Structure formats: C-alpha cells, structure tokens
Image 1 (cartoon, helix red, strand yellow):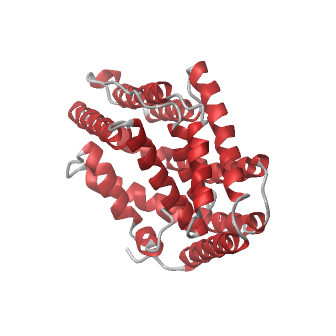
Image 2 (image 1 turned 180 degrees about the vertical axis):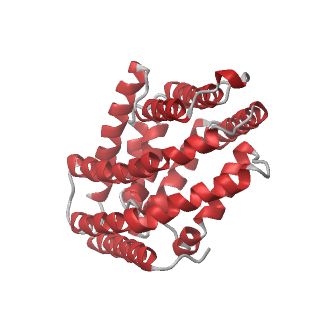
Image 3 (image 1 turned 90 degrees about the vertical axis):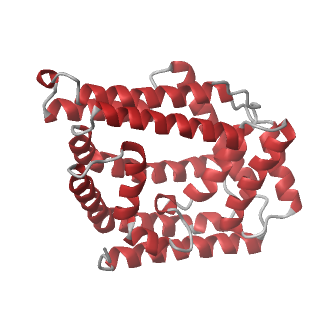
Length: 305
C-alpha cells in the first residue's frame, strides 16, 4: 500500500487533536451528548471492540464485565482528576500561552489516558487469552480496512483537495473550543500546515508496525499449541511490553520524528491560541468549565446501565 501524502499533513491534524485533548475530556469524546455516551460507555465499548474481534457467545460476558469494571473505576477515580485538570487549565486559556505550557498540559492529559491503559491491563489479558486464530484474522482484516479508509480520507485527491480537507477538519475542531475562527486564523492554520515537518511515509510505517505488533502479541498469548500457552503472569508481561512499544516506538528514527512532531504541535497550538480574541478565549474557558462540570456530575451520578 502506498502512502504518498504531502509532508505538511501532520501539523493540521495534530492541531485538531490538540484542540480537543487540551480539554482532556477527549477521553469522553467532548461533545454535547457526552453524558449519554459516558453512561453507555460499556455497551458502546463492547460494540466497538466487537467490530474488530467478532466475539463469540462465551466471550460476550467476559468482555462486558471487564469493560464495566473499567468504567466503574474510571467514574470513581479518574473523572474527579479530569475535572480538576480542566479547572486548572481554564486560567491558562485566558492569556497568551507558550509552547512549554501547552506541552505541560498535554503531558497531564496523557497521564490520564495512560492511567486508563494501566488499569485496563488485567482485562486486556483476560480477553486476549480467549482470542482465537480466526479472530486474529478478523482483526487483521478490520485493520486493513481501516488503513484503506484512512488512505481514502486523507491521501486521495489533488494536493489542494487534501489540504482543504485537512483545513476543514481542523477548523471544525478549533471552533468546538473557540467558536467561529476568523479568516486570519484560518490563514494561520494553512501556513502552519505548509511549514510542517511531517513525514507521512514514516508515520504510516509506524502505524503498520503497531498493527503487526498487536497481532503478534495476541498470537504469543494464545498460540496454536495449547501446551505453549503462557500463564496469566507471562501474558501480562506480553501486554505490558506491547503497550510500552506503543508509547515509545522501538524504531529510533520514528522516536526522533515523534518528539519533533510533539514539539511542533505544542508550538502550533500556542501560535493559534495567541491569535484568538478575548471573546474566543472566554468561549474556550466556558467550554472547559462545562466539561469540568459534566465530569464532576458524572462522577457523582449513579450509573444508568
């Protein structure tokens, strides 16, 4: 599969993600139906995972129970931390920000995501131990389909068409935080896109590496010969190693590239935020305050499912 995408792609897409992750509530999708989605996260999570693994009847209660356990923990432990972080970040958005401040906020947000991954490890192991060879093939086909869709979404059309598509997506994300972006701000986003150091081929190569790593890890946990099947302790090691490789790629070239892109993204967010008006900043603070309020109310509420 080819991936001849102009090197400028990453700046826009990363900025789009930053405008959501800067609010940290991206974990919960940051939309007007957030409470409904969160309260039904177990069912939605099962539906999403089932699209990859095609769970059988015996696996259904296991997967559902593990997701339910994770969500109960998240509601009790993580939502208050997310709310506190959102409240902490509100004053930051009232003034100009530096790339260092943006990166610091991003690191705190990533810590919340990492906490979920760590807490989910026992459930991941329990489910992985039941994944069959046929299901691994189902996952492989789903990943290949996703790669084709990604290529269709972001790699087809003329360079101008691809730029406009990225710009449209980024503006829509930015407006979720700041409300309507002005023409000069849209032009600024276009300039950031044009000067980005993104390497699409390297990024896609890492995407494929992670997908292959997932399939190989599942095969190690549940090999064809039952006599070779590792115990839960060893399977846990395999899952933890897999997660570590996702966090820090074993490819030194990609690691350097990722660090460069992370710094570039923080810089891009700071540049665009510093171009916003007082009214836009007020909107951003109110949006974060609403997310924080939702998080606290969800943490205090009884589950609906």
